[in-house]
Image 1 (cartoon, rainbow, N blue to C red):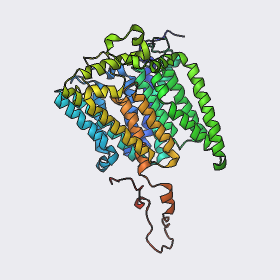
Image 2: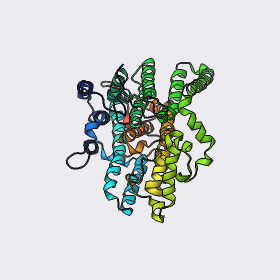
Image 3: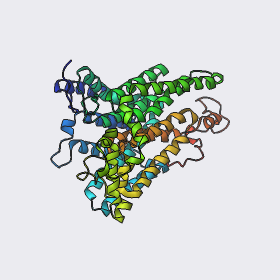
Image 4: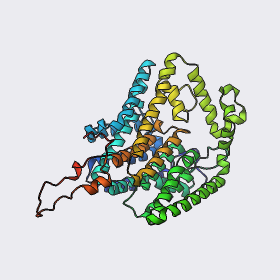
Length: 470
């Protein structure tokens, strides 16, 4: 076994470049066979970001105009997406919170005279919009089976690089307990874990795969998340994983047997969760300590003891610094914060909590804006058909948990992830329900006698609580 390449170093060039070339050939062939431009774009947007992040030693460096090559590429993908999506889908009412959030970014930036950073943050949330709509349109054009199977190809990149990092022991060892993270040479385990979580979500809804094939793919992504060793992701996606296995396995039985089987699987899931908690007890020990002494941690940073600073990788200590700065701000800061990305150059690290960061950057209005976005999409998931509702709601809850100990909206990988969840949610929300479709008369085949005009599928009425934009 070779010595580990520590601190997230990229893979050796003799591994990185041949693997990249092979991945490009495979993805290029898959894109060439796709007959939907917007679906191909959605898969390309994911693949491009994941490949660019794998080459972070180059792509994160500054270009001649000052921006990083990664930022230039992401901006180009964002503009391309705007050109490809149908403009009428920008009017879908569930997307209104995104516009509210973008408007708040602009208002906070102008109020705090941090206009240059408005563009960067605004593009991130614009990227979320583009991914959401492109996933939605791709699902409409290709259907759920073909679209989910297509998107899974984008994860050939992270899974292949992680497998190489495991084989050649390319690791990141930054945890205080000495544990290792296999992240395929990517820059940070947070972004890499979010990438894997995106693949996990898509695999959960990949109806084009047989049930045992889907469960195998889900297990692969679960193992990859564990190998990445980012405990925030491991904890956050427990609801989605438990829901996925219970729904898939219970669905194999007849309706009469499902009640008894469901109870048995719930008991088994509880035992499994306890067992996993026992295996990882040392990694999660300080989380229990935080909950037990939560009241004692609500205080200024200067009052933290050395042991308290180490809890949960110093997250309570970091949060205390942001909250203290917010409290000591002006009235403008209380309402609009200090401006987008204003923590850069002031704080040592980002807030590791979306709401804490929103409070500092956008004030109390930022808290309201993010909660408005999450609540709108969660409510949309709760209004989807019963067959997918449980897993969709679990996915949204997992994403919300992720935001409590890291900041997926700050990284493009996180906005892509949420865009995939929201795009699928809108697709399931806005398509005709099975009950409505069953009541509609079938279209007459060519040559058949037709006594009256047949209703076409797209003429079917949507769910009553949905406002169509088209």
